[in-house]
Length: 223
Image (cartoon, rainbow, N blue to C red; front, side, top):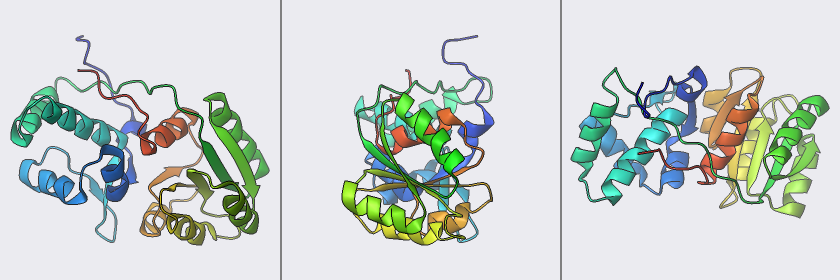
């Protein structure tokens, strides 16, 4: 097996990120992402019922590869051709391990204290500062007081008030929002402005990598 060969897990291929989140993560205009999809048909995201594009983490890594190739002087067409050769059904790109993250503040808005404790533990273990808010009003208060850069919102908080919380947090510039839920609420959460949606029970590594992706602190693909 070559160094770049790897089996990509289901979690890596699950649609998670909105196109606007991907554009910010990669510093690529939304219009460019749409053009690449239509012209080269190499990175084709899923669509929700409203027609919005939703990318998996592996697709984000593919786009990082394209961008890195273009930074090295390749044209968009050549970069996508190389990507096609790398993912021709026999080989696959290696997802790089995330870099050590900077200390940044995450607000965890939950209704379940046990789930909150679980998320807080793993995020702190990875070097993040975490504040927990149990309930919708507490989440709004803590947000105003601490100004976190990432908010993780349980969609079912306050009987489903997490959707409105997503909309509220995304109205503040520079804030990344990750919606989580034990029920499938991806489309509603992304339509409300969430940058990503994760289905419970949460995989700790996926949660951490999603935070890092949205803060653009993940490593580029290994060449």
